[in-house]
Image (cartoon, rainbow, N blue to C red):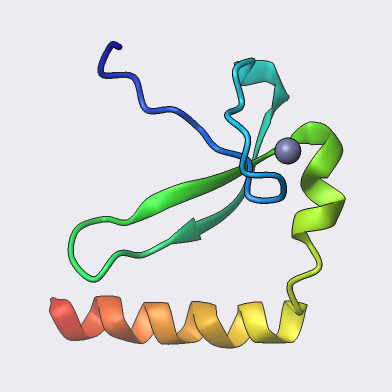
Length: 71
Ligand SMILES: [Zn+2]
């Protein structure tokens, strides 16, 4: 294996082998470090978006506060 990060679909947990098939759906922050991008297969994006937009907005706000607190 090379050092290339394998993108895993958030919806089906399968690796996304074709970069053209990977859709960035979210960015999650780790407890430390810059966090990671969340991808899904193009055909599975709709499955990922079962996350409540309002919840996502709240989480984004929490993440933002965390980032500011760490600076
Ligand atoms: Zn998938």
